[in-house]
Amino acid sequence: MLCFNLTKELYKKCRVKYINYELRYQVLLEFIGCILVIIMTRLFLVNNKNFSDILYIITLGGWGVFSLYCNIKNKKILLKKIEKDIKLFEELNMFGQCSVELLNEGLNVKYNSKTKIYPWNIIKNALIINNDLYITISSVEHIIISQKAFNKDKSSKDFIKDLEEYKKFKTYLSIIQSI
Image (cartoon, rainbow, N blue to C red; front, top):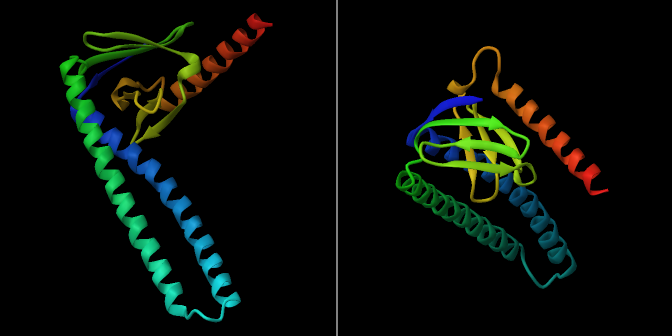
């Protein structure tokens, strides 16, 4: 069992880092899309001699400005969502002393006033962000475990390995039981 103190600052810091992590991949995909737009526009201009290179530049410029605007707007929306999550956590009295435990049924998380068991089949992934463990349950639920919860004997990497092995074992057992 891991025990730690979940604070507003820790929650916000980890959520912002995770959003930045997700946005990096989104920007990478947009960069690949940009290369495809450049190639398609260039092929169009080569095949159609009536247009000049100014259309090429205008198309790329417009696409770049629109992409930048969407990324900035998306990040602002996500930051507002984090603030709403923090207010919800405060209302439910979920900041403070927390504990996490691996059970047969799933991941057992005890907050100050609430205990929740997340079944193994809904846990999506686990990441280490700034030495804090970040477990994604769904697009709206996340568990953040402070690095202070881990001692010298058990690191966050060891916990992730245990989590993955436990999840695989439980999935394997459920497959056998369904046969």
